[in-house]
Structures are given as C-alpha cells and as structure tokens.
Length: 120
Image (cartoon, rainbow, N blue to C red; front, side, top):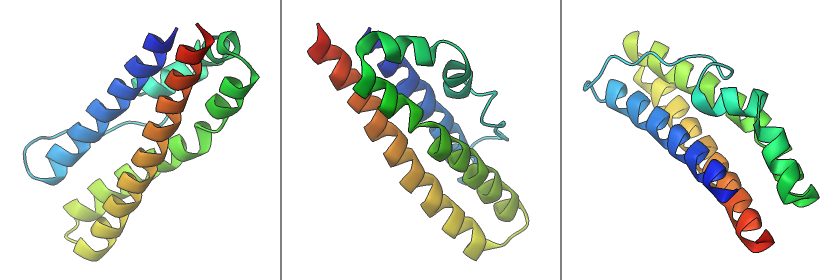
C-alpha cells in the first residue's frame, strides 16, 4: 500500500523540479492546475480509497493534502508569471511559498507512507 504514497511523492517532486528548471532558464514547463497534475488526479480519484484502507489517521492526513496542494499550484503559477514579467521580488516570494508548501506536502505524503508501513 505504501508504494502508492511514495509514487505520489515522486510525482510531486518531479513537478517541482520542472517548475524550478523553468525558473532557472532550463525548461519551458508552464505547469497546470491542481486537478490536472498526477498528484491532483490521485487526490481526486483513488487517493481517498487508498488512505481509507490504511485507517482513519491516514484518511485525516490524506484530507489535509488538498488545501496546500491547491496553494502549491497557485504559488507555482504566480512564480512563473512574475518571473516572466521581470518582477523578481514577487517571484522570489512565490518561490519561497512554493518550497514551503512542497515541504508540507512531502512530509504529509511521507506520513502516509509511514502509516501504511506500520499497518502491515
């Protein structure tokens, strides 16, 4: 079961890496909304069922992913837009938010993995 959570963590990290590469001038990734990325698709489909299979604590952690995930996508969009517009101050602030939210998402996905591992 935990493999599902680690796959989603990997999906998130790959998305973040693409955003970061674009901001660093090494890519042209423009991102997508929070429903269209791999993590978002999982949140909107099989994620709840997989969390429920682990238990109520896992479901609570799963439910706590939605808001920071949406905020992560908003921050990535703002970072890209303001970077393109030459607004370094706002872009830097958005990148800081992006990384803060990413850390939160990663820690929660790792918590889901931990819960799944202790269930076995």
